Image (cartoon, rainbow, N blue to C red; front, side, top):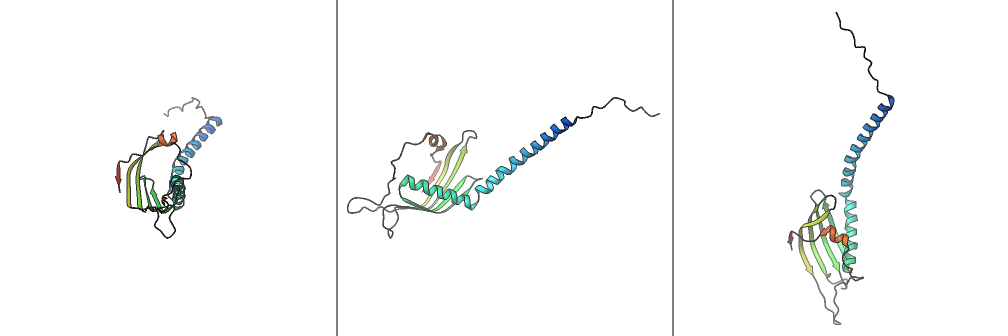
Length: 174
């Protein structure tokens, strides 16, 4: 003889519960997609030549304001995953004539840094390498020099820079 089928009623899921579950699954899939795609897209954008050029232009502007001279950086490349950056052909022009050597020249500047902490990041300079530095100081007959001076007197360091950057290098090579 066969056993009788169960006559207990099976509660059917309500359409409301099914919609809620479907929304939760869609939201989870969207969150997973965004958590993968956004960092990947940011890495691809940040590693592009256009972004390197943008950072190089920002560095030129910052150095010109800090030194008061005209600054040139021939090449700039960074490797985000290893936190390394290289700048080549760094030149700071002072008050010298166009046919004279610039006030300062660096063949290549290489930097490696670390980011400490995730919620309150600090940047630690691990290695700094300066290849072929050259300085050309001219003292003119009136006693002035070709060394540039910042247009604005330097202000005290902003607190955010004090908390963000630790300018002690673990290794410096000149």
